[in-house]
Length: 289
Image (cartoon, rainbow, N blue to C red):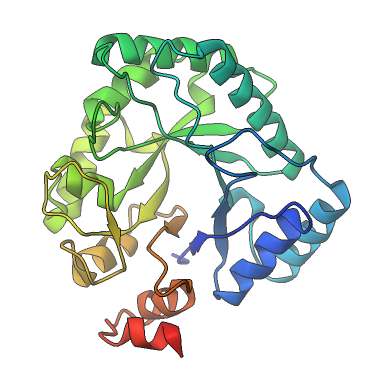
């Protein structure tokens, strides 16, 4: 089984997807994830087809499969609450169109926060929004991210993810993204990840699992805080994360979203550590060199 490993990378107005590929190659990745614009606002540059063509050529030359590349939907999309509901649906539909222009197949989406409506009402809103946004002609899969349970977040347990999927009409357009930090903070014990996968398979179904975010956590299990830590420097620990990354049941993209150190991306050093399966206690010093 080939390790499909990468990280979050930038997507700039000028270089767009080509710049994202160049950054991913700098980290010695064979996949990557990006936002198509700032995650906290609606400003979006028009997709440059020439940059996309150059990016796809560069990916082909470096054995990066476009089917393993991920777009992360912006944080400002909240499908769970009534506020700006129509805007959120419209913006998600526009994001889907942008992703299709880039040739990417997977969009990771935070399910949303109900902000006082209650979980059931929030899930009902998410289902309605997804059924409005998704179309048979779409070539993308929306991957609902497992959340830490901070505030009124929906998606903190597999049962909530299952309820959303049950309500989505186009089942082939929906998937799941696990996040190791979020799982830990939501209260899932990652010591025996096969048991977690068994539970997920029983409740949701492993066929829906399309991508996994690999992050250590600053918090104890069940803290419901969602604070990412560099690989091996948090409460999950290097060995548990390696067991997750190399689990034979997970032949899917694995993406790092770990914190920058002194303004520098840690991804090249972390990916090296993961490939060698050897923890580098001097990682943070090495990043600064």
